[in-house]
Amino acid sequence: GQQLNQSPQSMFIQEGEDVSMNCTSSSIFNTWLWYKQDPGEGPVLLIALYKAGELTSNGRLTAQFGITRKDSFLNISASIPSDVGIYFCAGLDNGGATNKLIFGTGTLLAVQP
Amino acid sequence: DGGITQSPKYLFRKEGQNVTLSCEQNLNHDAMYWYRQDPGQGLRLIYYSQIVNDFQKGDIAEGYSVSREKKESFPLTVTSAQKNPTAFYLCASSVPGLTLFFGPGTRLTVL
Image 1 (cartoon, rainbow over the protein chains, first blue to last red):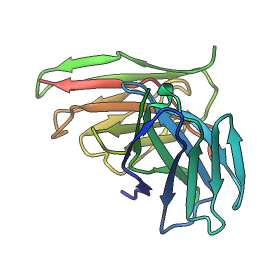
Image 2 (image 1 turned 180 degrees about the vertical axis):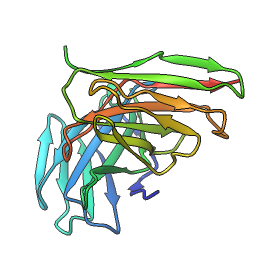
Image 3 (image 1 turned 135 degrees about the vertical axis):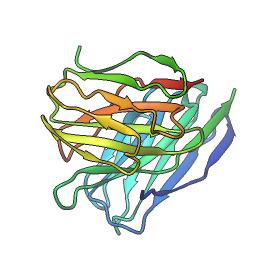
């Protein structure tokens, strides 16, 4: 099945540092979503983006929907230990009769206190 | 509180046995989904249902079956035909075309 290219695959940073991760696709999406997954839990929605060029913030998190509709990035400012987890981007493929989320491969974030 | 529940959290089965994973939602969502997650990988779609009594295969449906007799419930059966069933299984629901909300997951281990 189709998957998005998400990078980096993993990041090991010090508490207080800023973090940036991104997703690219060969397909156009109408919606981009960013989820965070804690170990052994289901993903939790962080930010949803519905319009090309849209820049949305949620606390220390900022995400943008690329102008080409083929990419998105997520920034985390001033990281803290509880930011640890796996971050997934997802593009909503709502062409035709189906509405399917296509997921990135994930970015593992480790934050050292 | 509205949400999605999956049970059990951990499940152990012997090879060759069928097993059914439960997923219930009280969000009044029409669409429900099952994903499989393996270590270090993204989520792969097994089956999805956009309305009661209707469901479609996802990208990796072989060895799995589902039913959607009620809006609130979308159980997944992992059959003995599934070659490598040990994985973390995630159920999700949504209003079609909008964001997915995930349950807490069931970790299935086949011994």
